[in-house]
Length: 606
Ligand code: F6R
Image (cartoon, rainbow, N blue to C red; front, side):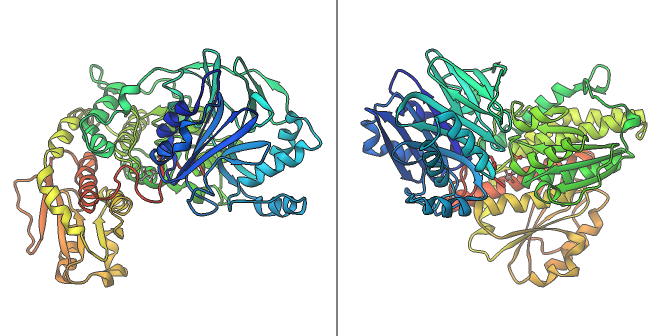
């Protein structure tokens, strides 16, 4: 993870660097640092914790350099403290780094042998000393080329040099990096968002490329050092969407925005006049596809799992689902007639990108379901289905999950109808239900007060379980993940039918168990499983949908009812109370909801 920024200007840059770092905090928030050049010296200031701490550091006020680099860190090598914070500098060179240098131990040994002294436990510091060592015999361009060649692993780098008052080097392998263009100044950033307040003119570095960034121009080079031309993109401005407004946390805002996410997605893809789903320019004929493989990480993986149920129900495609970090190292049997679909909010997740890269190298058909359309996964896939949910800032994914499953549901419906796997009348009916979904999501959001008080169930407990069957199983996994990451309570998501094959042993008096039992095909089975856990002392919170029929079970601790719709769409509504449970539980405990411990929004390291 980690976020990097660089500014080369005629004006002092430290304040702008700090402001951009605040926007990059979603990438890491263990520590932060900045280095600028002034009077022929590299000045470095670093602080443990958030960018706010760095900003309060009195040394920042006296930094008047007009060229500089900054960093927010998500620790990989070495504890999150001010010594391991970036930038890392020698007398000649200062470096910020996002990624992991896999051969850092070997390189460090070599450099120590050459007399270099290391201050930190980071892998990054080897880059500083390697450049410094190479500069003894080479010019800057050659020493950078030589250094990049020697590094194994992934990196986005920003580098400044003591003797070069008008030069920042940017380089990328694996981790993302963008260049921005301003009036008499140019920028480097991990993403365009960090640069948005300064420019909307952006170039993304490709894998293996590096750049020479001067105040008045930027030059790009490929891995071999050949000069290349790159496109400048003009991005639309959506600054306002990054505002928390009246909400206490981005997560609270993003949960409430979900009806809008659904509305936008439906507006983008559904042609209600002609009762159709528009997926323009889909590059493959129906005869070219007989299976789909869905790949993602974390919440995005849960979206894939959810989609598996829909694709199996609505289409005749063979469906498989994979966790990207597993897929990328397995011996995959690639098939020409498979659509490899990559699901990601950020579009920058390292494992998901690596899985895409493997599929591309094998000449497979690739499709991306992403939120950030300028991202690497979107740019490098054959076909992109955007989520259209606007920026998601809270680290725990909420509206992007609903956005992802909406797109995947519509894709399944569309493919099912093109292949004649579902009747037109059923397709029309499902479309009608889908159009009503945002309203139902809005109504479901209104059950707020009850969820607030119920969320105390997770105070001082040893653990908890989330159970569901069929369509509700992936949602149970997602509910458990939300609780873990926000409230730091152990939460196990499980298919309810599997309980008696082992996990039932965990049930004891008072253990909170959230049971998802909407009135669908699995209802009666799930209710039986629920009774088995109640009989063993579990404190059960049942989440179901409204119905005229009473739930036939005794000793349920509490029940939450979501609105009613067709079976396919209930997972959307069941998700909402689970997100709120996790939110309120963390709120009561006073935890940092938008930035939970040890996590980051965009996981750009393996
Ligand atoms: C959990 C969460 C993560 C992400 C995962 C993939 O709330 O946000 O599990 O879903 O890191 O991220 P993207 O979707 O950006 O690829």
